Image 1 (cartoon, helix red, strand yellow):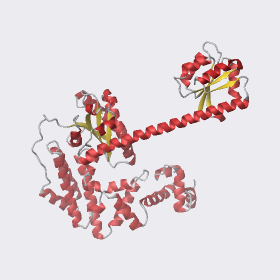
Image 2: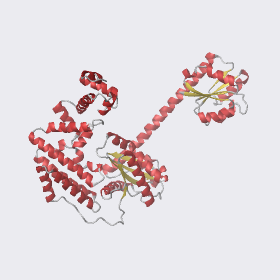
Image 3: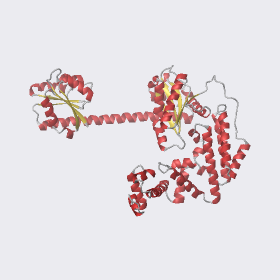
Image 4: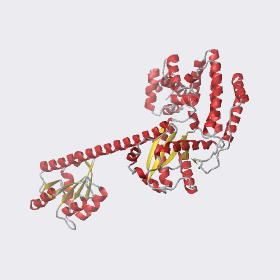
Length: 548
């Protein structure tokens, strides 16, 4: 839709022009006025009209002066002169100079006037289409550059080295390769309990902007920096390109406190936990990959230093790590197996809690690899138990468990080992059911109970897989082979069965029943209910002798 401005010193003529044509049909849904050129300049700069129709001779400032004042300040606006025959030469000169798009002769001729305005509308449409195409091209160009920057970081992480030609990096950031200085960061997101689709989506969409906002908030000079980033599950690996040798580092106490406050506030708003590790700045592209991996290792210190949000690399002059190590002893391995075999679940939980605190106490003294090795030993003990009982670990359970990807979902060792204890409890249950030959039925019963506990929420297959530690692909195949239906059909049947029980409570409105069963749209609830029962919820209530 377009905006029109009429500049004319005679009020009756201004009013007449507003009613002379069907401006709404022509696409003008907003009309503003001015009674002379001086007022026209002020109003135009405020309202930014798409088309200005102006008289020439007016007090204070005439129409041509007004156009001359506005032409370069409102380059997208079209100007039409409203002129008499005695001023026709002025109008032609203005058009020749490019200041005016067209003119209307007094007295107005309807068909001619309509054609002139329609020509102007076509020009406006062409301009808007050109602007749209230019914006789309600019957007695609920006996205293409962003993708190339993301691929650059991914290559750093996977290959362990930067591209051989530093000019590639210089081209992507638009700076002189001789003055490049890189500052690596790793930003991590830890969800509350089982991550929801909403929190994961928020993380993917906002991680980069969150880091940019934090850096600009605490380091105003960062507004001139370029960010390269790559998302990998719960982490975003990034580095900034700085063009100033003395840009202050985040490690200074004041800036460190500011970064802590920023991330603490963002964490509270989203009900998640955010952690940042900063690597050392470098001018040599060859060491960037190693510095980024070291920043990633610094994030592991969240298990030893709880309550913090920002971590940094130990400097070369810092006290070296103590020569310490940790292994899962044979006695603990035997006790884990014994708890699983005997079904002593409370004893198993106590053992896992003690192992968590043993590892946490040493986290600041040993490397990240040693800590992960200890966790792997615990999992390997469970795998040996599973193998003894005929459970195919790789097929049945989630790869995030087998490859330690779950570690990034936690910020404390007790919480991490509590999750591992939950897996072992599930492992014990699956082994018991496998021995009875009813493992598949038990899985479906467990999933149904979980869905009923969260019936008013969105429950994806991934969420169910995470809850029971299963591989999503394994679960999907299980639904098809054992129940001859997919997961969504399984969930829908549970929701509708639950809705029937709710509908028997006559005082509960049907719109509330829909929400209680996880349907945000009442119309969708009615459609689904009818599809499964051949009747509407209202008909079902009547059939059961209930009143609406």
